[in-house]
Image 1 (cartoon, rainbow, N blue to C red):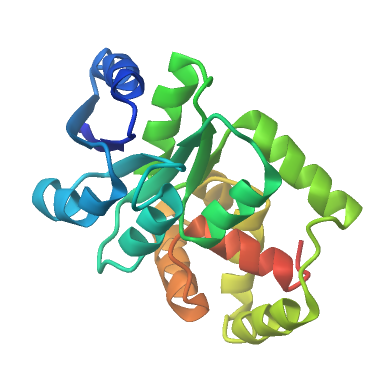
Image 2 (cartoon, rainbow, N blue to C red):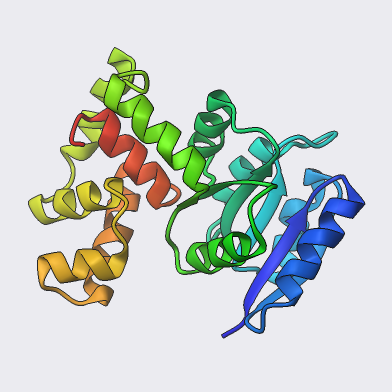
Length: 220
């Protein structure tokens, strides 16, 4: 199955480079492009992509707003934010806005193509350097939630069944659907059902937000 991608970036040369990388893959197709986030919702409605790659800094509507707008759609595509910066506040803002991935523009062609495939499968994707920073921040308490966020997250998690909490914690630990299925001795389709129910109960746009809420609740 071909993964359909929409690319948003105000720099034409950047779009051209990313398009060339992705078109070199037999299973990935860039179906539309835009230089401003204001066209994101219309392009998604027209082309029904699996993945949207968006620059974080664009004139007019930026990548964070793109992620928020697309997350509000009934059947949203996976959104990954592309940037030359790995500043912590950008990472947290992007993930909280509904982005499922955060990738640096200096990622290798292989990393970029693999990220698109991972996102198309409904899983989260962060650049390795960003993942390392996030884990370090959580380990040292730098990523600790504010008191009100912790209370809100625990209240949401209380709505989950015991098995759903197991799945949510596994997602927060970065485990894939196949790994979770193996650990719990269930099928991947069962894991997907659990994850769908979890996202509904937690009001989470994607598994990345499930992971953030689970962390805020103190379960990881």
